[in-house]
Length: 170
Image (cartoon, rainbow, N blue to C red; front, top):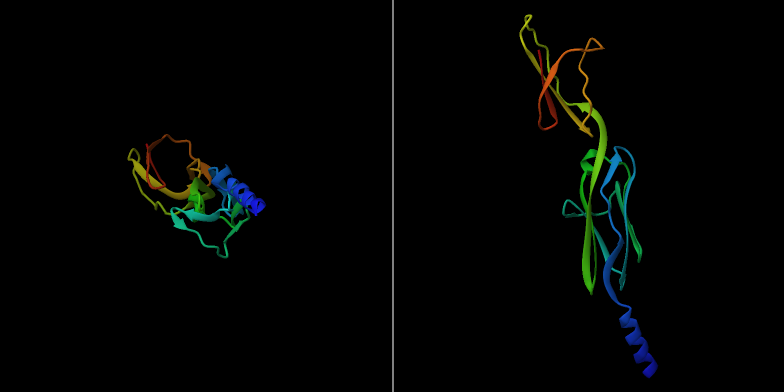
């Protein structure tokens, strides 16, 4: 009986609150790629693992899978899209405590024009203003062309707001 009490005491000494060994890192991925967020951890008993996206619990789906064992947790997005960009966090908990780590996922996508700046007619010496609306990460370099030829004109960047570049050509 003394042996059993001793082993229970030794067993309790091994119990510990969860702790991250490797944490999440901010990640930039390319649209369409598989993306994996992974952590390794310790804790005894093995902690419960929960994943969150922008503060909301993530449930497994056709596009997102969750896997974990007693030391690792993995979130996989099969085909990453721009709408997957945001704050991801992993929370570990057992009866001795809980801990959370977070990172930001950014999804790079090719430039996509989202508007048409239309046609304008101006007389010589008058100013024409155009707005180029786009979706892209990172922000693209913009080259203005006319009939497929790059314009060698002076353009003044008026501002960037809601993914719109506003230039005034003189």
